[in-house]
Image (cartoon, rainbow, N blue to C red; front, top):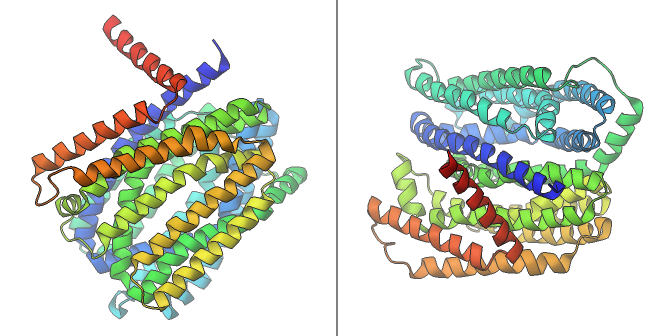
Length: 512
């Protein structure tokens, strides 16, 4: 059996495991979001989202290092170098421990000052906001220490670990919702504190799993100087790129707070919850694919790498489109059905953020290829300029009093610029065939998108739908997009592969 077929089956298996995890997490996330928003209220919910976003700004210091750890871990797993893996793991944990301490100190000092002097927080909720800040910092520090362990799981493609631990995570978050309702003390403080406790429990579980399953996952303090030089050389330019991404995302959230108040942060928070639930399907698919892209480059198999990038980009786009179009077409009904009180702007935020994620489908596989190649200086310079302009354009528009939705429209436009920069970098560094990308991926994807939106615009039942009409519309849209994706979006080889996979699954079930 060829390695390509084996890799495709591994990707399919891992994707299914991650989807099982995602379905569980999506259900819990949407349910708990509804209950949490009702329990906290719009203002407190907005405070939690904007303060947590402020802490996430400090991933400027850590995000590029996390990318470096994941890259080096996956490369060595692909080469099968156990001794090098042990060195990478122990060095990575040592670095992350130091980084967690550094971020904790900086976040406490800068965060308290910014919270007191710059953010728009009602005076009677400032005390609770301080506790949210402290707990958010603790949660962030735990996430930093978890990076080397999660990188090992992904590099070894043991996606079942994520699926199983998700059951525990979901159960604990359901418990949080119950405790939130019966808590006699400040619910915002309780919510932030319990989420920090959950992050500690999950971190311990992942640590135990890695130690039992991977021989290299046994930490002893070491700092390999050559490895540090290599990793920090890689980090140098990713620092700027990661920094402007954080500035664009979390900095914009803070701008929304400064110009519009916590109610708009609550609307953005709800929209991000919806986006996280839907885009999570694409992220889980890419988690299963990304190690194969990196490993293909590590062994010099560029043709397979190119095929994986083009195919995974297109499939990710179709996966998201199957969910995005039905949600956007029925967004008002879904929000009224889901939430007790819908914050203003939520519907438009959901649609625009989902469209941004649709654009992100074109970028993520290309980013994996660029990171695998390693020479990322030109791309990171371009990314820095693009997102800095994006951020300052958002500031100017809000300052000028333009509608708040303008910020999200700008994000979509500048994301298209990022995709263009990625294509140029990919062609230059690992001979990526841009013409094939346009022919086999971009054009079929956009054709399916345009025909789908046209179909939705003429589909009846938009006005005052009942639950039965909503379900009927959603199923009709999904079937239509599925047919378009198969007939227009896929090549003959892709159709053959999908058909063979379907027949194989049916045959196995009948044989049982």
